[in-house]
Length: 158
Image (cartoon, rainbow, N blue to C red):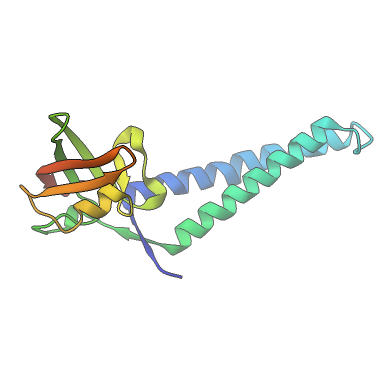
């Protein structure tokens, strides 16, 4: 099993979600299932089936999070000294077609979030940026066609 890089913030967020699921939601579901059992016939007990279904979803997510955390290797971004873009970099690029600057943070697969401009190092843009320097131009193959970006700056911040 190969290790996957993750930022400290990403690991902390996943650990908080796991903690919430294990200590709060799992315990609430135990109570819900117990109360639903007391209602009688389990074959026609919608509350029981609903609680069991939710329990399966929660247990699946717990197992998924435990697997992610077990194979993750934390990269301390603030300690990176590089003249090229690598995992953890916060990169400002110019979308040449739109003439607009956008700042992205290159993170692990399990912590990427397009709403927060966090892109995975395995995404097309992430792959294109890795190894490049300030002033370089990258072309990303997108469903709507090739998109050209010019790298304006990058830094390593937590």
